[in-house]
Image 1 (cartoon, rainbow, N blue to C red):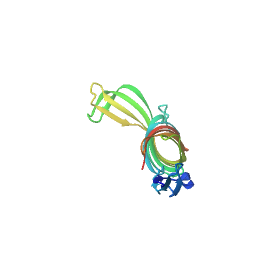
Image 2 (image 1 turned 30 degrees about the vertical axis):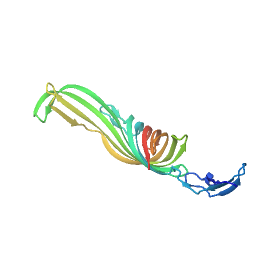
Image 3 (image 1 turned 180 degrees about the horizontal axis):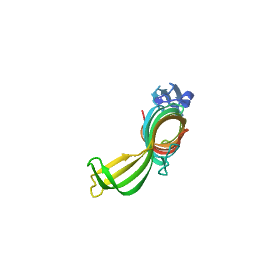
Image 4 (image 1 turned 180 degrees about the vertical axis):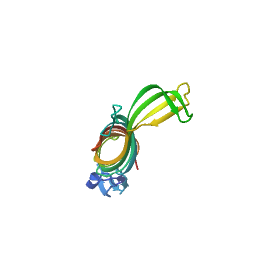
Length: 260
C-alpha cells in the first residue's frame, strides 16, 4: 500500500520574478508524483502574497554647511577711499521636501539662506566730542567703520535622480532652477567713547551707503551621497552650485533626510 504525504510547495511564476517594488504573488500548483521508493507524494502549493518595500514616497530634510559667495554688490566711499564688497566664506542653511518615484526619479523643492558680509574699521584717535546724552564736550576715542552685507533667500525646484550603490549608500544628483531674493545694505558710522568713562558712548551715521532689494532667477546643480542610518532616516553630504546674474555660490552641505 502506498503512503501519501502532503508537502507545502511555493512555485513562482515568471511574472513574479520580473516584479519589483510591488506585491509579490505566488501561483497555486498541486503536483502528484511517485517517489523512488514507491511512496506516492502529493505536493500542494498555496497562494501567498508578501509585501516588498518600495522606495517611492514623500521625503523631507534639513541641511547646513559652508559656502563661498562671489557677488556683484559693492559700495565705494570716495572721500574715505574705502570700498566694501560682501563675499567670501559664510554659513548656509535650509530645508527641502520632495517626492521619489518608483523609477528612482524625483522632484524636490528647497529653501536656503545665507548672509555675506564685508567690513573695515579705522581708529581715528582721541578727539573732542559733544555727547548729546551729557550735553558736554569731552575727550573721546573715535572709531570709524564701513560695512556691507547681502542677505539671500533662495527658493529652488529641481528634478533629482537616485542611484542606489549598496543597501546603505545612495547617490543623489539634481539640476534645476532657483529664485533668489537679495537684500543689500551698506553704510558707515562713527563711534565715540568718552576717555575715562566707558559707559558714555555715542554712534553717529555718516553719509554714503545704500540699500536695495532684487529678485534673480538662475540655475542650481547638486550631487551628494546619502547613508541610510535606520529605516527612512538618511544622513548625507553634498556639493551644490548656484548661479545667476547677481552671484554665484559654491556650497558644501551636511543633511538629514526622512522618507515617509
